[in-house]
Image (tube, rainbow, N blue to C red; front, side, top):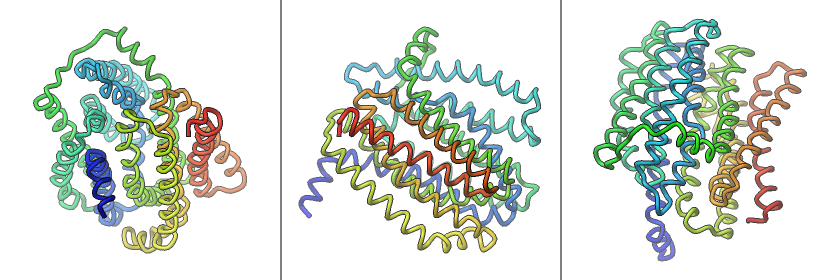
Length: 412
C-alpha cells in the first residue's frame, strides 16, 4: 500500500494528466454511445450512414491542417529556452496558410461535382470544422499538463448540446440536425479553450513570416507525412465501405468502432501522459515494463469483447445491428496494436529524434492494408476484408517498429 502511495505521489502530475486526457477522450465516445440507440432508431441505418460519410470526407480537410503540428509544437514548448508565444504563433500562422490553400481545393472539389449530393451539409460542416481547427491548441494543454481545463470546457458544452439530439431529431428528415448539433458543440468547445488560452494563459498570437513557417515545416516533415498516411487509413476505410458495400454496412462498422473507441480512449492517454516524463528522462527499462503491461491490456480487451460484445451490440442497436459483432471482435485487436505502436512512436522514436521512422512505419502499414484489401476483394465481397486489412495495418506497424527499436538501434 505504501509503495502504491509513493508511486502516486512521485507521479502525481502524470496520473492527473492521464486521468483528464482519458476523461476527455472517453467523453467523446460516451456521448456518441448515449445517443446512438435513439439515433439509429429514428434516423435509420441509411441516413445515419450518410451523416458519418459527410463528416468523414470533411474530416480529411480538417486533419490536413493539423498533421504533425501537435508533436513538433509539444516538443518545442517543453524545451527550457522555449518562447511559447513564438511556437503558438508559428502554428497559428501555418494553420492559416494551409486553411487558405485547402479552401481553394474544397471549392474545386465542389466545382468538379466530385461530392455526390448533400452539398449543403458538406459546406456547413467544412466551414465550422475548419474555423474551429484554426483556433484549436489542445496539444498545448496536454504538453503543459493542464488537461483538466479542456476536459471541463468540453464536458460543459457537450452536456448542453446533448438534449437537442432528442428534441430536434425525430426521423430521417432531420439529418440536418444530426450533422449540425455536434458541430455547434465542437465549435463552442474550441472557442472556450481559445479564450482561456488568450485570457488566462496570456498567450499573444501574431502572424509570422512565411519563411519561419517553412522552417517549422522542415522540422515537422516526417511527423506530417506519417500522420498523412495515418489519415488516409482512417478516412479511406469509411469511404471504401460506403462506396463498395453501402451506407448500411457503414452504419454496422460505425457501431463497432464506437464501442472499440471506448477502449482505445481509455488506453490512448497512457502513452500521451507519459510523454513529458520520458522526454525529460529516458529509461529503457521503464519502456520495457510499459510494453509488457500494454500487451496484457490488449489481450484482456480482446477476451472481454469476445465474451460480451454481442450483448453490448444488442443493448445499443438491437438485434438488427448484430452484423456488427463479427466486425467488433476483429476490431478489438486494434487496441493491442495501437497501444504498442503508440509506445514505440511516442516514448522511443520521438524522444530519440528518430522521426523519419514515423513516416516509413506508416508506409509499411499502408502497403500492408491495401495489399490485403486488393487480394481479399478478389476472393470475396465481404466487409470483413476491409476490417482485416485495417487490423493488418496496425500489426505490421508493431512488427516494423519493434525491429527498428529493438534490433536496428537496440534502444530497448
